[in-house]
Length: 319
Image (tube, rainbow, N blue to C red; front, side, top):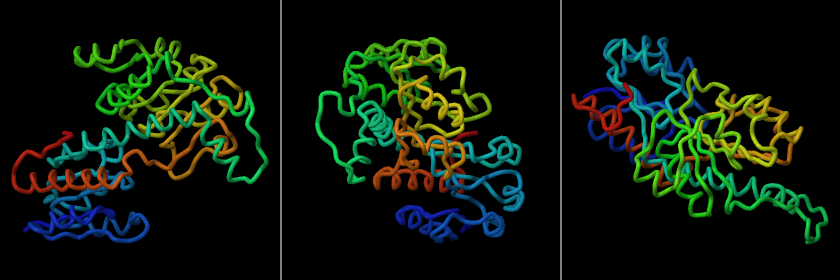
């Protein structure tokens, strides 16, 4: 029987699945586990099931010890894991792709609707108790039909977002490291372009690319200036892909008309310049936040850990 450390609260079904075969040490505190406590708990672990709030680096891997076989992240993104350090030590790293695709695409399109139709502004007005009256020019937003969605990162979530946009009558362009399946491209009517062209022609830019050194501040002052003044930016990928200070300036100065963010550079902190603005929708990293999706994520992470501990290939390896 191996020892599995779970670094944060996950659905009980996943814990029960792990406990059926192994000893499980699961953090149950209301707050995220502290660094020192995490380093203490992982000592002697054969498997670590991690949340994106925990940094899995060389220090932690060394604290765990040479018997550690697998780090199973309960997330599709894995910028919290030092994958080369895992590989160097012969540790399998795994993630949870696929199971959160629709939930995240729903949030992305929800942000598109909230930003373009100014729904957040309208709700805040109602809740403020201020007087309001219907009028021809009251809280006018923008329609989506016939407009262009630019998808940056055309993986599963990007494609799912594009399908939703197509249903709303939008045209699709995308920037990605490789061409998507020709059949899917034809179904969507999607055209692959370089980032510069995407920014110039899109009415809505939606970010779905992985985060890493190559995509840090991928959208900064220059890219925002290249967008249409009538355009919107939506980010449901990772916060540091966008330079929040530059975005706040662009929104304040009217370089773009609006934005919707589910992720932030320094979560849970949000750039104060964004908090002052009405033309940005801000939600607290809810991309995968459905009961069904979070349960599926935890179960897939458990499957990844159990497979490696059994000497098998995990369903979703990273390295």
